[in-house]
Image 1: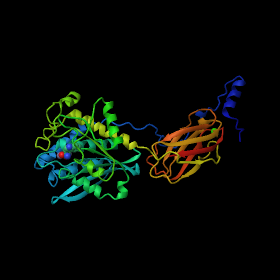
Image 2: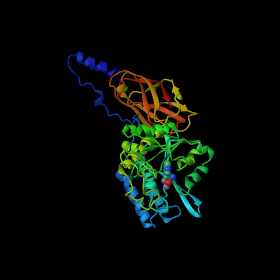
Image 3: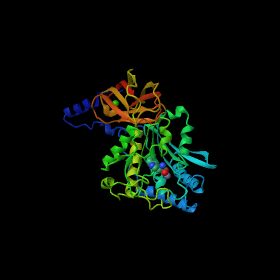
Image 4: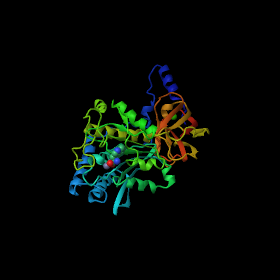
Amino acid sequence: MSLSVPRRLAAVAALAVGGLIAATAPSALAAPTAPAAPTAVTAAPTPPDIPLANVKAHLTQLQTIATNNGGNRAHGRAGYKASIDYVKAKLDAAGFTTTLQTFTSSGATGYNLIADWPGGDPDSVLMAGAHLDSVSSGAGINDNGSGSAAVLETALAVSRAQLQPTKHLRFGWWGAEELGLIGSKYYVNNLPAAERAKFSGYLNFDMIGSPNPGYFVYDDDAAIEQTFKTYFSGIGVPTEIETEGDGRSDHASFKNVGIPVGGLFTGASRTKTAAQAQKWGGTSGQAFDRCYHSSCDNTSNINDTALDRNSDAVAYAIWNLGAATPVPPGKSFENTADVNIPDSPGAAVTSPVTASDVPGNAPATTKVDVNIVHTYRGDLVVDLVAPDGTVYNLHNRSGGSADNLVASYTVNASAEVANGVWKLQVKDVAAQDVGYINSWKITF
Ligand code: DTR
Ligand code: ZN
Ligand code: ZN
Ligand code: CA
């Protein structure tokens, strides 16, 4: 068994005898067989731009549906069910778990579509919704194809990004809103109290592309209101508090049972004042939407800038409110037992901790503190192993000949249930130099 002189001393000795003996530099040794593992993700995801073209493509589809079904997409008509089928197909293809909820109103079957994005804390639900039905007099492209299409495209953006928010994301398209919030009332009334308690918020989008637009923000919940205001101030667009909406759209169904609500609106039959035209452009003395509840509410009844801005605001709110505050800090679990790390080519060793009484999933900002005593940290591959076996790589041989590895890592473990046995796994993949796990801690 060769005398295991720490490699850096051997290199110095070689230089001292006047010749550079080709020391077996670590890179010359067998390549590390670090297990393929997802890297620890630390950056908070940034909201995407929602492509206006995609949102408008949905509106074109809804217009075609109306045109092919008697000119409308109203409750109880073929155009509404065709609209639901269109939206559901897109979401099924994107990996959502969809549920079609039926109800009866005015002697006709109504439909709500609920789409859940797998993952996130099941005890903290953030929902965004829009009513999908039109009035019987027209296609309902602004009212409310605009909100429906923006929520749909945001959901598809969540899928494209494979977003792993801390909260559980849910999306809803409501039936029979025009008959009196029938669909959303039915959904909320059929939610058990324990399920309602899980809602951190409901975001409503009803008419967000009005041709003579205003930028109105619901003021029902301060945090949600601020989130939207922050977005609009970031793009230099002034906003006003939505004053005509109380009780006039689906957010009322959620607010009535104590769920925090918010949302956006670009105006209906009220006229834009001179001051508002000064602020937002457009035409003063003219309705925000002259085709409100009329046959001319078609694809030409949309202001692209307003639709684009509001669609991006939907995504901004989902990404930011969905990140939410993780499990309260202080939930730490530590193992201080020393675990020797065999020199290469020895097997990996592990040090376990058992997490308990932590509700839901681990946060996106799970913290791992590592204390390893070793004479050559560049030999080490260090991983966090979740209770289900998922491996998150923390350290992969960086640091060269420096001693010890004492470091903190932030891991996006939001896809993992927090409770269970977590392990720190360490493998020495380069000969000479040895050490041991001194301690490690995981904090949710
Ligand atoms: N009730 C909505 C339109 C509507 C009118 N005022 C507001 C305020 C906030 C949201 C929506 C509305 C409809 O006709 O669908
Ligand atoms: Zn309406
Ligand atoms: Zn509406
Ligand atoms: Ca070694």
